[in-house]
Amino acid sequence: MSMLLYLVPVALFLGGSALLAFLWALRAGQYDDLDGAAERILFDDDSDARPHGNNPL
Image (cartoon, rainbow, N blue to C red; front, side):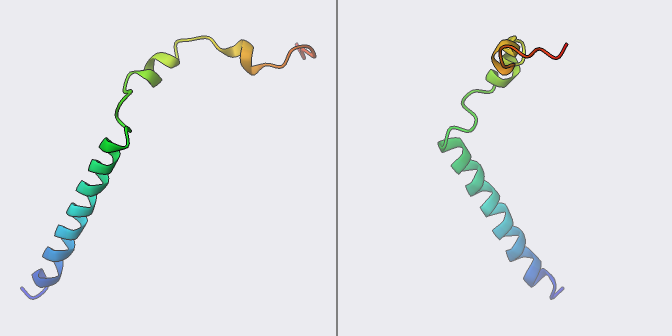
């Protein structure tokens, strides 16, 4: 029973810090563009990644 005196405040602190981290992420704009990464994979941008000339194939 005495262990609850330690565990309850620790659990409340961890839960509160997770809530604060989530609210900070919302205000910082971390969740603004949820579909951008999913749609970006569909575009073919390989021509920008390869250097011109010296084609090894």
